[in-house]
Length: 559
Ligand code: TEU
Image (tube, rainbow, N blue to C red):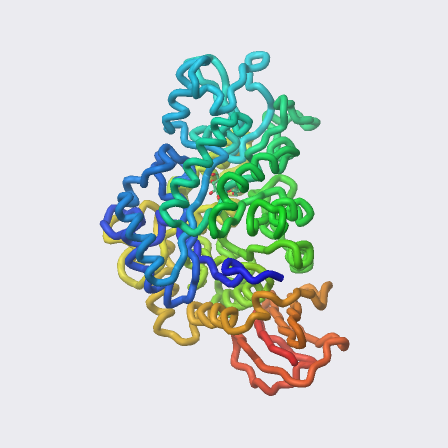
């Protein structure tokens, strides 16, 4: 397999609004990020992925862009951004930007023009349709609840918005739109950035004719993924983007691709013919979702999680590259979701990190994950800020759902779980701001914070640091072939990695019980070395059968 810098890197995601506030307005900003670069360097990361910092009215915290070539006022100025890029590069850290091109803000000048009249030159930059029988053009549901269409009085037509109504979808069928996007991408690349995380990219192609979905249950609106996810023809758009833009730069690209299977994925990331280097797939983030979607929370099973992760590991092996993540700004905190954030907080956070970082792919650490930040439970819906949560709550009430039930779903799955301010120290507001934070700080900052963990050599932070170092010191962690063992075990996630005559053995107990790990007989070896563990372990212990402690994780190198 070809060696590449982005295969050997660790990426850290910064969600700027919640990372570090430098000017006391309660909102994180670019100068705040600059002030914490040495902390990130200490952790050992190679790349920062910056969630959107462009001009935006912040209906969806920056994922609704009103000017692609300027910086959001709350975050600072273009000069601050240039300085951030410089300061990253000075430290040998790369910077990748979020590329949000499925939609813009409704306050983008293109949309202001587009909505002004049917014959405006920008009309076809977006997707407009007349209504049908006095209602929306079709029954598609928005990903953020309600109809995917919004009526606009000026011209008496509807525009499509797969996300919030302040995020009208761009019309990718229009070559002028694609050209504008390519120009804008090159404008940023020429400033010296190191790549893009490409937002919601599987949505850019829509089913021609915009047909209604079958609706046997007679719902008001129907989830329409089969008509706007990964549609035939999408690769024409992406190949063009590759040819005109991406192929001209030594950058890394990661596409965010809900709805994509490992088979589909090869079209996107095949090392020769694909458009991107890796994808954020969603299948492992769906193991706790019922048929009703993400807020229809169901218990998850480890066997299923193992199946999904392994399917991706094997599916791309030798042909494409995986990205490895358990968290981001859209997902609940992993220690609360897959670990135990009460009795085994540190143990389970470290176990999850081990299990993920030892797989094949580029690991992503989401801000706060490295100290085991947890989900939050606000009592009142009024304390939540996320447009997805608020729309879901409002629309579900209309459908007759009980507030208590909705709040439980939000506590489990709401995106604000990941968006509470970064917990830096024990001072007021966790050291995030001297003002009033835009969203409440998680009250557990008094125990869980960066300062405590920097001082404690046994902390989650120091464990991450070690995992990151192991990847740098051992090519097998990057390039080894993955194989699942103990497939059907309901508590233990175990696998091997193989490179030449070396093997890694990774053992992770996902339960608070104490199952025995029994080494499969076909795994023979002469010598072993314990690389990392989250409990004190005698390095000479016999590993034919190990009585595991709750959430125990170990990695051995076998020869
Ligand atoms: O998310 C895209 C996406 O597919 C989401 O629907 C995701 O499944 C959802 O947020 C889960 O609740 C991206 C961004 O990551 C997200 O923050 C934005 O809100 C969205 O695009 C629109 O830009």
